[in-house]
Amino acid sequence: MFSYEDIVENLAEGVVGVDLDLIVTVFNQSAEKMTGTSRRLVIGSPVSGIFKNDPRVVEMLEMTLGEGRLFAEYEEKLHRRTMEAPIPVGITTSQVFSSDGEVSGAVCLIKDLSGIKSLEAGSLRKERLAYVGTFAANLAHEIRNPLSGIRGVAQLLSKKVVDPRSAST
Image (cartoon, rainbow, N blue to C red; front, side, top):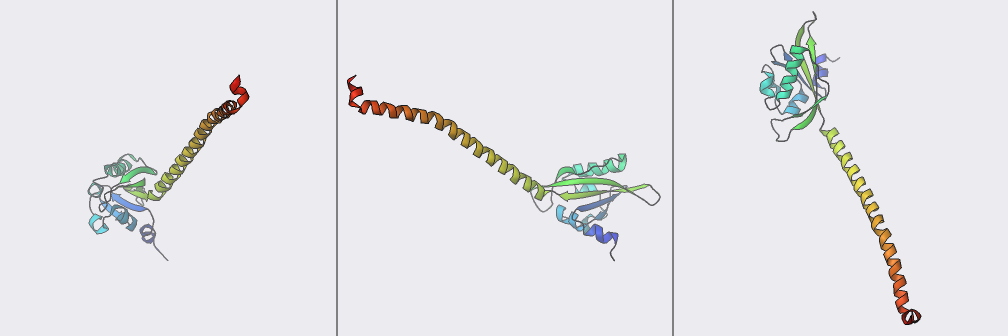
């Protein structure tokens, strides 16, 4: 039998939970991988310190706690501590309620969109290449039509010049 903690820990999405003071209380292994930060350094720290290069994440958690505003698959760039290039992520936030129905914190799910963005870029590249191929075929056709006419006239003129009867007239 497994617990809720096991489920949260093994999700592919990063899970970041904060209390009412925006202190990190949950930080699963996927969140560690995505941010490049160990949970030992994160748990008990202000979320603003962890996401200092990503203030929009902190702002979303603040709005979720303060205003009850929820974000669903909000696309953002996440800066990793260990890597220079940010990764595209989808962020979903939600309030966390205690057993008596009071808001006790907020949770942020972070989904890595790198693979999806890579597929989209590949698809876009294929579409562009198909467009260039179609354009090149149409251009070749448009050039070939007048050239065929010019070639036909040139052949007729060459026959007239070679023909001794046409040279005398």
